[in-house]
Length: 112
Ligand SMILES: [Zn+2]
Image (tube, rainbow, N blue to C red; front, side):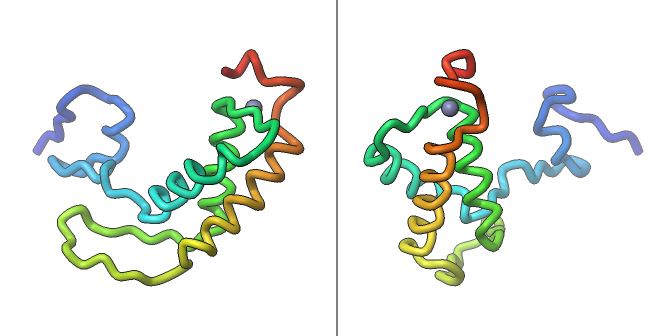
């Protein structure tokens, strides 16, 4: 039996098993961290806001949270794990760290 990847060997193909693609199954904390970032970023003074800084905050915040994967077809969304304010506190801490010590030189203009 041959396995064919529809759409070529793109990023999604790494997540493909037979005809099933698992790429869309996301860690539930991802959306919650993004929501916290949307809320807190406008309040941060002198924040660079380039891709490197945004990704650093996103990755660091997610690394501090327990991953929680929920199947797309699942109707049950259990409210377990960290609360919204826990997540905001973590994002706030990471944001401050990246804001004061960005992982690139100077303004980050070249990374925008
Ligand atoms: Zn930056």
